Image (tube, rainbow, N blue to C red; front, side, top):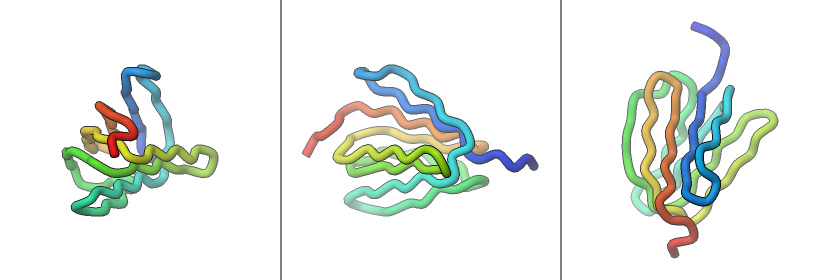
Length: 87
């Protein structure tokens, strides 16, 4: 295995597609559950109503009050934001 982190793709209508490499952690906080996704996390797919934080040594992204779909598989995380500041 290589030492790289997670590749992240974020898509929303306002900004289009953004990609980030070597992400260390992704924190998902929903009204129903909390997840901390790190390298080699199990494949997962779901819908979020809450917040998502994406971090490494240089990047610190935070999406608050969003409705979105996410998928994590093979150290690639995809976030498709359908509504921001919904609450």
